[in-house]
Amino acid sequence: MKLVYFAWVRTQIGIAEEEVTPPPEVGDVAALLAWLKSRGPGYAAALKDLAAVRVAVNQEYAKPEHKIAAGDEVAVFPPVTGGLTESATGGGVPWR
Amino acid sequence: MAVIRVQREDFDPGRALSEIAAGRPGIGGIASFIGLVRGEAAGRPIDTMTLEHYPGMTERALTAIAAEAEARWPLEAALVIHRYGKLAVGDRIVFVATASAHRAAAFAACEFLVDWLKTKAPFWKLEEGAGSAGWVAADARDDAAAERWIKDD
Image 1 (cartoon, rainbow over the protein chains, first blue to last red):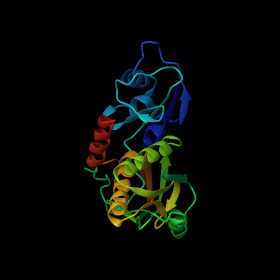
Image 2: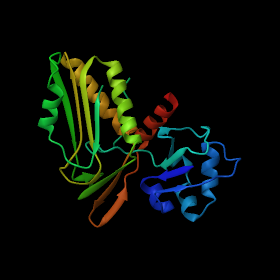
Image 3: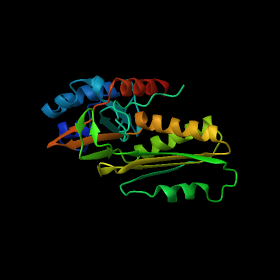
Image 4: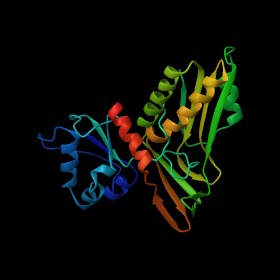
C-alpha cells in the first residue's frame, strides 16, 4: 500500500510517501490511521486530532469506514485551503 | 468537455480567452476570473506563498468540478488553469473561464467553479512573510464545506 502525505501532515511525519504493509486486521481508513499513529512520534503528532485531517483513497475523498486493500494509494492531508487568497477567511460558499 | 491545466508556469489570460472562443460560433459570452496572490493574510504581510498540490488527484478533482458545472449550465466551453509552486505577491494563481450562448450561464458557472475549487481541489498554502512561514489552516466554513462534500459523495 502506498501512503502519501501533504502539507503539515507531510512535514510532521517527515516523509512525503512510503510503502507500507499494515497488519491484516487493518481493513479501513479509521483502522489505518489508528495503526499509523502507533508508528512513531511524528505520526502521533500529525494524527493527534483526526478531525483535522482528510483522507483520499486512490485519489478520491474517503470516509473513515472506507475499505482499503493492498495496492491502494492512500493520501493523508489537512483540509484543503485552495489557491485563492482574495477572500480573507477563505472557504467558498457552496452553491445551492 | 472542460480543459484543465495544472502547471507551475504563469499563463497569458488574453491568450486563454482567445483560445476558449476559437472555433466556437455558439458562444455569446465568456465570463472569467483570475485569482492573484494578495500581499496580506489575516492582517499579516505576505511575501511569497508556496502552493502544494496532489498531482493526479488535483486534475481529477478539477475535472469533476468542471463536469458538475457543465451538467448545471449550458456551457459551450470551460477552461481552468491552476498554478502550483512558489508564487510572489501579485502573481496569478488561477484562471477560470466559462463560455455560453448567453451571459447568465457564463457568470453563474464561473462563480460556481471558483467557489468550489476553493473547497474541493487538493491545494495547500504555505505562506511566508516577515521571517516566518506557516501552513494556512482551513477555517470553519472550509471545513463545513468539505464535510458536506464528503457526505454528498
